[in-house]
Length: 228
Ligand SMILES: Nc1ncnc2c1ncn2[C@@H]1O[C@H](COP(=O)(O)OP(=O)(O)OP(=O)(O)O)[C@@H](O)[C@H]1O
Ligand SMILES: [Mg+2]
Image 1 (tube, rainbow, N blue to C red):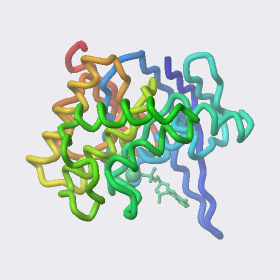
Image 2: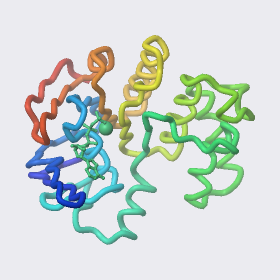
Image 3: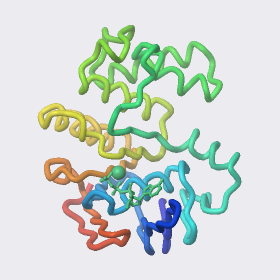
């Protein structure tokens, strides 16, 4: 349900041209738990950002379900992102002045849901990620692992079809990182949410059902490790 075909992206910075993606094709089925691996600068973030409607490609197509996002109007991209895509970032990206609850609830407020439903779903999702009782804490009063759990809850609370996670464990110690990954996998299994995450951490790759390696903007290998 995510189909990437011959995707190209070049960044131009003054005189320098960087070909970040040089013809990437990839199909990701609903419910997959797939890792995009590759060294620094290989194009992982670029690929995730284009799939996630944060960045645009120069050539090639990306379709999500029945929507072709490449070439879509900006307003349509915003809508697709809002309805279908959850993001988890390396540095959590929580809003510091908001509580854990408010960080999660904000996503649903933006969708215009009724207050009672926002409350119920946000509290439930925070419980789901193991943060019951911490709803009122601001990010600064939470550990890195707990902050990333809030970020996972924020990504999942709107029930997206895809969660894109760009190096979600890079700022966590390995034990905490592993716990966050286990949580994502458990949610993937139970809810069937598609997860696409980038990493250069071997431990994180071990959790993937499918491992796709990028190198200099091209896919070098794509291997199924175990079935979902
Ligand atoms: N906004 C930008 N302007 C210019 N060059 C960019 C920009 N964003 C990315 N690049 C370049 O594009 C290439 C791919 O970058 P990208 O961030 O996708 O790599 P990455 O695999 O995510 O790396 P990392 O593991 O360090 O996060 C790199 O050479 C990078 O320097
Ligand atoms: Mg990156």
